[in-house]
Length: 147
Ligand SMILES: [Zn+2]
Ligand SMILES: [Zn+2]
Image (cartoon, rainbow, N blue to C red):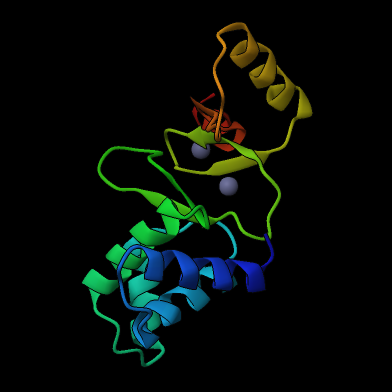
C-alpha cells in the first residue's frame, strides 16, 4: 500500500465506520505518512502543535486508533506504560529487537521468520492476518559500558 492508497483507504474506512473525515484527521494522517521510524502518540501531537496545528490530543489518539484498525500503522508495546506506532504503508514488513536498558530499537527483516510463521500456522490450521515478533535484550553499546 503506497501513501496515496493509504489515504484513500483511510477515508473509505473512516466513512464506513460512520465517522466524518475531518481536516484534523487528515492532518494526523499526513503527519503519520511523513514520519520515519517509530513514535509515541504524544510525540506526534507535540510535533503537530509546534508546527502550528490546532489538532487536539484526543483527535491524535483516536485517529491513531483508526489508523491502527485499518492497517496503516502498527502499534507496539515495547515497554511498560506507553505504545509506539510506526507507519506500515510504504514500508517493508520487519520485526524488532528492543534494548531494555536504553530503549534502542533494531529493525530486521528475515524471510525465514515469515516462512516459519506459515509452517506453524498451517500445522494448527490457523489463518494469520499479521504477526509481530519482538526480541527483548541488551544492545551492544549497553553491554560494552558494563563490561
Ligand atoms: Zn541499549
Ligand atoms: Zn519498526
